[in-house]
Amino acid sequence: MLKKLYIKNFTLIDELDIDMESGFSVITGETGAGKSIILGALGLLLGQRADSKAIKNGRDRCVIEAHFDLRKYDMKDFFEKNDLDYSDDDCIIRREVNSSGKSRAFINDTPVSLANLRELGEQLVDIHSQHQNLLLNKEDFQLNVVDIIAADQETLADYKATFKEYHTAQRQLEELRQAIIKSKNDEDFIRFQYHELEEARLVEGEQEELEEESEMLEHAEDIKGALYEADNLISGDGGVVEQLKSACHSIDNIKDVYRNMAEISERMESCFIELKDIAGDISQHAEDIEFDPARMEAVNSRLDTIYHLQQKFHVDSVGELLVIKENLDKQLGQIDGSDEQLKETEAKVAELQEKCKLKAKALTAIRTKAARQVEEEMRQRLVPLGIPKVKFEVALQEKPLAADGHDKISFLFSANTSTPLQPVAQVASGGEIARVMLSLKAMISGAVKLPTIIFDEIDTGVSGKVAEMMGRIMQEMGNNDRQVISITHLPQIAARGGAHYKVYKEESDNGTTSHMSRLNKKERIEEIAQMLSGTDIGEAAIRNAEELLNKQ
Image (spheres, rainbow, N blue to C red):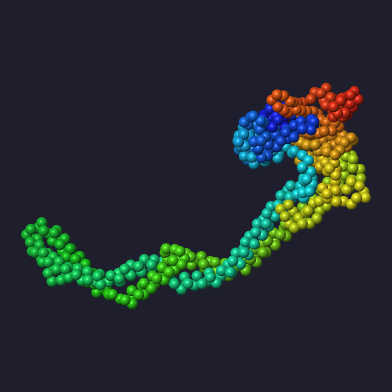
């Protein structure tokens, strides 16, 4: 529940620091006194968009801070999930807005995003203003009411999980169909590319070998001439081999008498054998090298094929071409097997659809039972609120499977026995809609624990006994471990509050300022008397005010 509200430099408020009470409280004040300012500050605190125009004239920033008691509500998970300090007896939310329009938000003194602030705010406060009556036009709101009363989150969660799986499978099926259409449109081109690479019979590493051979064939005459010259110098008449042989013979003749030459003789013999072997290899290479125009043409033709494929597929190696060929082969395999894959996926979608239908049917059964409960409770609540001939029906119609089931919910209403049932938002008057929404909120609050509920002039269009009954309903809601605050113009409702706050304006040389204070018993009698009789408060008005207060 909201324990304390602090507002500084917000529109007409200089500074407000007020303690709030549990149970049912009321806020009264003349039109334009600033009640909407209090709600605006709370809205800002709960994550609404900030506007620098909300800062009081002449100030550079405004601050709104609230303290909440969370001891009766299980909210620890939110704080742990968002790595925030948790204090169940004093949760502090603060919002600051500066003159540039920038704002900062804090939960227990830790900076947070507006999304975090909004998420927590939705669990802390429900502000029901007149525009919320438009929710009666919205199917999802009406469905949510029935689901809250049904109180079977397990069945709903089970259905939602199955629908999510079904929806994912549907999307995959559609993506597969589109891929198959595209693949089949591209099939001829893919086959052409694959056959082009297949016919090339590419071999990993061949490009490097062919490029080396092409270089050799291009310079065959130069290579052959160099080899012949080297062979002649090494093994020709008077060449290195012949001279080395003579030198070996000379050293061999003296090694027995000059033993220092024994090792040198062996080394020279080894060199002679190695050089003779080299000369043989050079001679053989010289014989093997031939300028072969036909071979050169074949090599260059093969390289032209490889280069053409590389350019066409935007790659630099045969290895990359082979990878492309493998991928094309896979694509063709997928195309060839796509019909079978499509059948399997369609069967999976159909199976999940049937599962969804079965679970949606179970959900419908639960909602049908809850709908009858809503109808009965709404009739019981609306009759005492001055609609004795009320007819209220929750109509369920089937709709296509969706994330929330296949039920379309409509609240049908008639205030007279002779008037046919029609959607409540279309036929109910402003006062009737206010009573319907209050009854719905009272019913929902019995099923969902929300710490603070604020009604902003929900009593529009009602008076007398009906107003008294509306006040009693809000009082009962406040007695059920909830904090209910009503901003009202009606004395019958104001008298029901356990605490009574008044919003008023003061004029001074510095301008207009709004204030809010808690009324004591005497002030409260005077305020309710003024609400009953207007500006001039007579003895009769005072007595009526005292009577109203004594009724609670």
